[in-house]
Length: 81
Image 1 (spheres, rainbow, N blue to C red):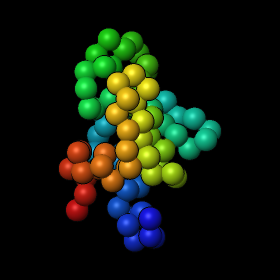
Image 2 (cartoon, helix red, strand yellow; image 1 turned 180 degrees about the vertical axis):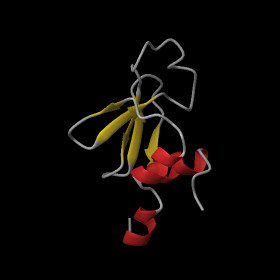
Image 3 (tube, rainbow, N blue to C red; image 1 turned 90 degrees about the horizontal axis):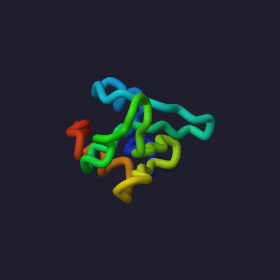
């Protein structure tokens, strides 16, 4: 991913979208409720299954298996200008 393209998919832009980041890990990953299915409907508290890694530019849901490049996540959320 080139530098200009990577600027489109920043953590700051994602945070401004209003979707809460529920957990953060030292390896640069964070977790949010899955937006692709209702698999987090039964989650309690800060339990979430969709892992987003802004450094690597990928996401993966450990419950339903949704995965892909972060650009797909941003397009799905209408966060791409």
